[in-house]
Length: 72
Image 1 (cartoon, rainbow, N blue to C red):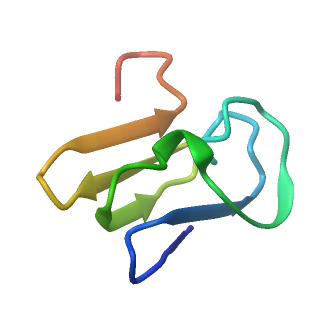
Image 2: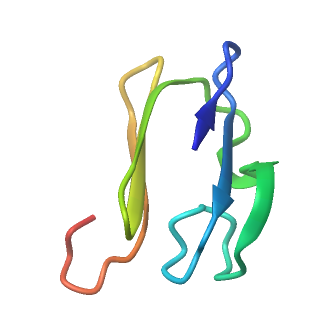
């Protein structure tokens, strides 16, 4: 996961649980902008094995990926 200096989030890699935030489970070999997060300025992101999270400049927390037992 990559965070730009303008707060945009890019992701790449295996995506079997939706952890790339693209709205599907297709893996991506190169970083792509997470369109669903456009319009928000992120200041911090973290990538886990099955899910990812990010915090915006106004303090909103977003999470995406595997949520089979309510972990998000």
